[in-house]
Image 1 (spheres, one colour):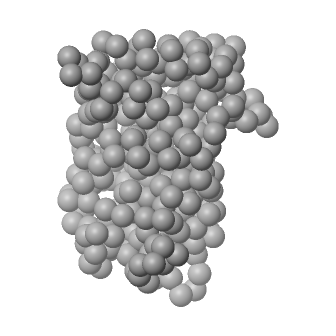
Image 2 (cartoon, one colour):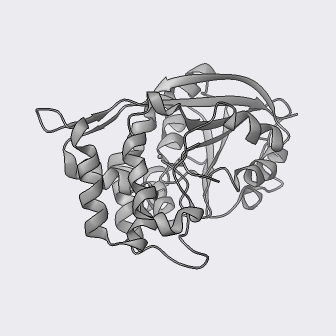
Length: 285
């Protein structure tokens, strides 16, 4: 919640949320990012990702999805223009030559757009992924169409493009916690308020980008945390609550998110929230 698990946004034009980007990026990579592993695995299995796959990951963040594809033998390129702190963590994972180990020569990370990843020597990609789920914030698909239109000329004709989104609210227990962000940031609701996922969100984005839908699936992605503190840190790392923090303060947001999580805390103090995510496979014309 990316990805994730929602798209980061500014509260007002030019206004920066009162958060520590480095700490949030670390919380994302250590706590929250793994919640979408079932989604990544389902897509890679369905598309038989492995040796011979040349993958372009849009909004790659801290790179877990790329790492999983690379472990299957794929050559991976990740691009991310908005989260340098997450991209720095991806470099630690995927380009570890600075840390005394050997990196794969077919792994690239680009701080920029898909166009910045293009050059005459790069073969066409056989798979494009945009794993950061949409369907949680009003307007959270804005900008994705532009990314897709920039990426598809770099892919082979007929190559699959994968989009991801939240499932219906009745199957995503995290929805009740996400509403806290809207309540606390009420004066700023136009900047990004919670909304339920709609059935055809992904298809509409694909069609606007000139892609042809060609199958979809749903995957259970429960959010599980060791304790309440980990759950609060993980959810806040998504960026969804940044507007609420700017409108109020960190302590109030922490308190209200923790209260919203109490129904999902089990006797052993762990927190467990079942969710369903949806993916769409579209094709490059």
